[in-house]
Length: 63
Image 1 (cartoon, rainbow, N blue to C red):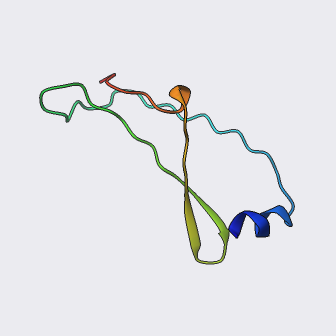
Image 2 (image 1 turned 180 degrees about the vertical axis):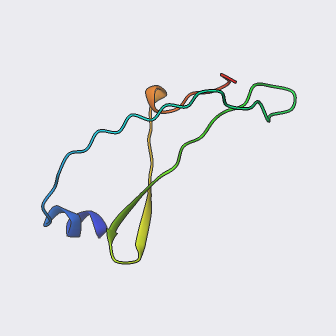
């Protein structure tokens, strides 16, 4: 239902690039998997997690 309500609103395309450096390795036994969570506010007090799918959206075992 939220998707239908959002379809009636004005939409602006936004492209985000997120980069991190010097991350600490906190994972015991293997390399850490850094994680970035994006939350979107569609109206008022409601926040929704924006899910990213695909290999380019997540980086595994780099630290």
